[in-house]
Length: 204
Image (cartoon, rainbow, N blue to C red):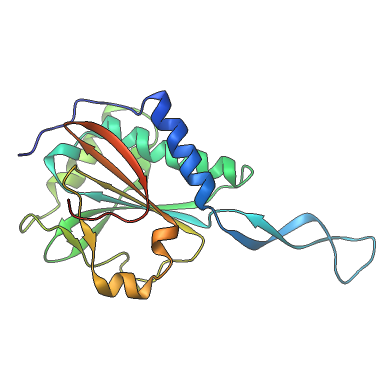
């Protein structure tokens, strides 16, 4: 039975848990730094160095009445973004948001800016995005992660937000993205509250 969650934000313990998980799954990758000593010219600076950073964030929001709460989604998504930006030493990173639970199209990109800051206009845009999303049935298997290759960068963060019944990724997705469980977090929101887990979602 669906129940719209009345919680509007993460509590302090959940925010600490989110930060701890994100810090534990960030990967090391080569990035260009103006402060790194040059490998070609002695005494010069500018070159590649290894840093722990996220390259981007992909948010997947399950279409279900329990999650049609703009304030809660706004808080979860903005907390994920700004925590990742802090981990990236202040460097900005791309973010994409999708609704899923559509048997015909799988996922639908939605306006990411509606999840940063509170305003009536942002809530109205969110409701418009929801109303334009055509749901065929209660689908619990996610068959797409993007509109093109379905392959996620190894330094990208995937955030799956579902109700307390969960969902699962298709075998094809998991095969194409073998490291996805190491770079994902799963946030369950239901009548029992909010739970944050490391890894990909499963059907409960």
